[in-house]
Image 1 (tube, protein in one colour):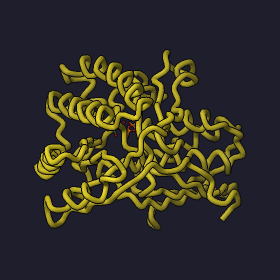
Image 2 (cartoon, rainbow, N blue to C red; image 1 turned 90 degrees about the horizontal axis):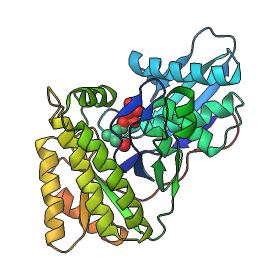
Image 3 (cartoon, rainbow, N blue to C red; image 1 turned 60 degrees about the horizontal axis):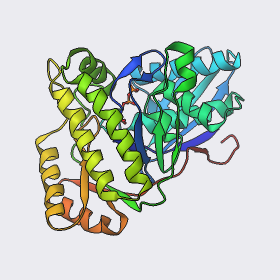
Image 4 (tube, helix red, strand yellow; image 1 turned 45 degrees about the vertical axis):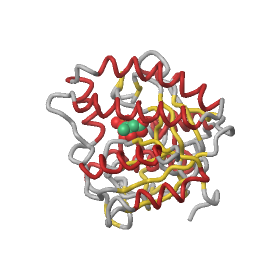
Length: 329
Ligand code: DP6
């Protein structure tokens, strides 16, 4: 079974867990799934083998990535009562480890493909809950367009049932995201570890949680009203708040690079020139500009001028994670 899923970029970030093993967040988040950088994952049941095989982009997966996939498959096997191993082939068109949410598209595609391969009948909410167990942000990539991931309440199995993403009607907006890839080198600290460290040591962590609740409520209103300027302002403040919270961790977690700040400045200049564009950034140095679709070419051209080796690409709202042909390949 082959499934395709796309990365998402959060406008209200997820940064903090209340339950590590169930991947339950401390607060809700909201994102846009992109129409670029798909991940295609094929899962084949291999009953005669005694171990799972995991390949990424044609090569055996690095040990840590393979362990996460195997752990995820173990979860699927518990749900189905099967003990059959599987082979997993992933083709990732998003560069891994540069803060462009390859784990979101990766685990969304894996959840959809593995559920199908093991014969699990899950609706989209259940698929979102399953994808969440692989990587929190993957819960949102199960859905195309805009999606909100509910924090839910409680721990363990109770929390598990209450924490899933669902689509958000953003038909009043006509947004684009202009992705500026600053650096394809792997990041200094995996986001999972950075998240744990921030929660444990940053004195700004509690205020961060409060600000997210407020930002999320205001974001929902701005989206419903089709107010892209408000959406952009709230998203930019939220992203800067997350990075500031990481900066205050001890020792500091610093994902943004000097080039990142140059692009953020450039986005602010665009606003002074009368083009509404707003910056956001995940756990990496890349910067994403949110803007109106009709301004995307201009925003892209302007950001490209920041530096010669900047890779800039325009993304629109993308589709749901799906099985590509419903048949084994
Ligand atoms: C900064 O979903 O990668 O991109 O649940 O530990 O796998 P785990 O974390 P992950 O974190 C993503 C964090 C973020 C913000 C976001 O996408 O909301």
